[in-house]
Length: 137
Image (tube, rainbow, N blue to C red; front, side, top):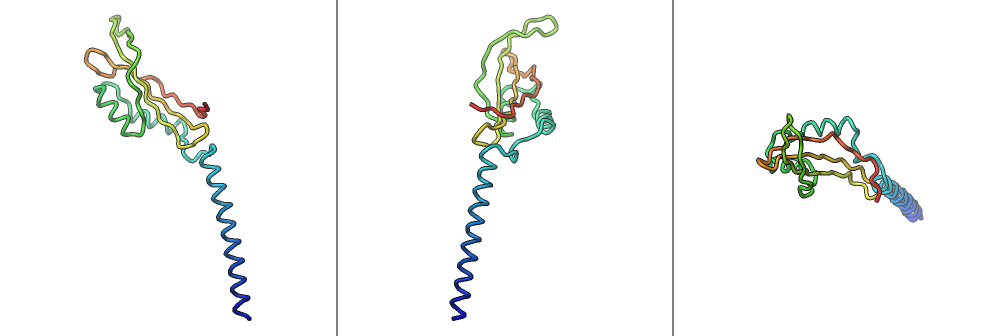
């Protein structure tokens, strides 16, 4: 009979442990998928990353490769515009790249926007760091 009592005790302990593991897993899933700050970055960290990725003076294709290697996804170039550079009108094209945290609901988005000369594809302007903490819908 003592063997049966030990087996019953172990089964109850295993059931309780299993229950705690399931509950813990549910809380971890809710935290990471619902808006937890695990995958978010602070503005100071983002500004350091932005400074390291600064594509100023680079060729457009090399700049896009460098930014995409850091985990950003770049849209197609858009908005042919004219920029004034020392009183001279320079035709430029803009491009936007973004990176999102891994949250399913309201992820944090980080943007890198820059403009490059249409004539020689050199990046001549990089916009200020732009970060949206909760980009819901």
